[in-house]
Length: 466
Image (cartoon, rainbow, N blue to C red; front, side):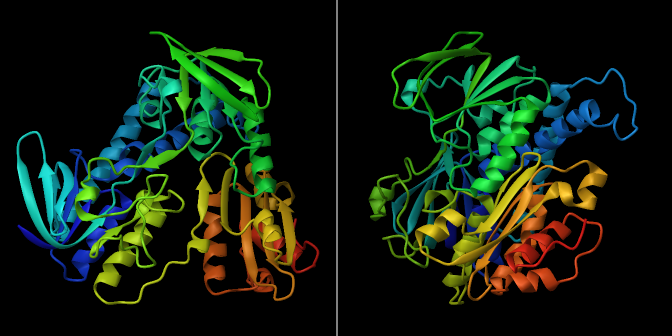
């Protein structure tokens, strides 16, 4: 079969890119090695983790907060097996939605492992058969997989990654998480809320390295209240496991004294690496860097003409929405259009509670670049809407240029921060000032008023709401 474009990988980048290609009139095929579409995000990442985060937050509120709201409940218990069942149902529905979109847009789906035979031929191999697809152009969207060092002895039973953690059906007494990044903190929240003793070991001296220090301190304070214990500035040396437990050996950086923790599970969450194995890249001359990422130019084209790469397999944040934008970008570029992506304005979100979100530059980055800036901060506890809902933790920070007042970065920790960040993204796309943000009418009482107040602070004005 001959196609205008063949896409390897059906995650957010792959399936969204495929839809856009089809919309633009290209005969499109998508190749997926697993039996279900959606990639890591839909199956073992974004969607299932958010389903569990919501379920466990409901339980946590019932146990900790309902009484203060005047809602009396008794004999509340966490049914993790039912939570997992609901999560699986959400995933199944989402998978079905992607399949429906493939059919609706007349995109041919091939199940099997795709690898390049040449710059115009792709081999698709499954357990039953092997096919060769001919194409004019191709997009590599194979995503990433968890990093699991040999010393950690990853066995998928007691030493696990996020994939296995999303299918635990009995509440663990204790879990150790290696890595205080997004995945580690989100899953740590899930289990801490339902009674698991959670300890996090992080090599860096703070959680969420790379995000704004103000909001990460806010979040760490909240997570400590949840019961999560942090070992920052520590390095794990080895992990061993038996049939019923895992033992984690670690030490403080720059010391030799080894400490040990025994737990029901050890969750390895130290990052992900691009999945580019056995794709036949060597057959078509596609270059990769020292981290295994595929090298692309400004048009996301690889060193092999007509072969593009998007998402986790290339440089940049490993975010589903980044991959989606890149899939659309490549499809439109192929048709001669002039798309653009502003990577500085791709927001990042952590779905703990309170949530954390960010867009643009941090204070640390601005200082390093000698860019003059102003800062406005507003604590969520000073907001009427927050007090009404008892969501008083966190703060919002707006950073603007000292001379032009253009918004350079917005960083949030608080209720619904994942949704609130889009106000900042939209305004920054149009290069708005902090004063613009402050003068826009925000409905009262809402969490969004905290954004307005932080912007007012950046302009040098005092808060006007409580």
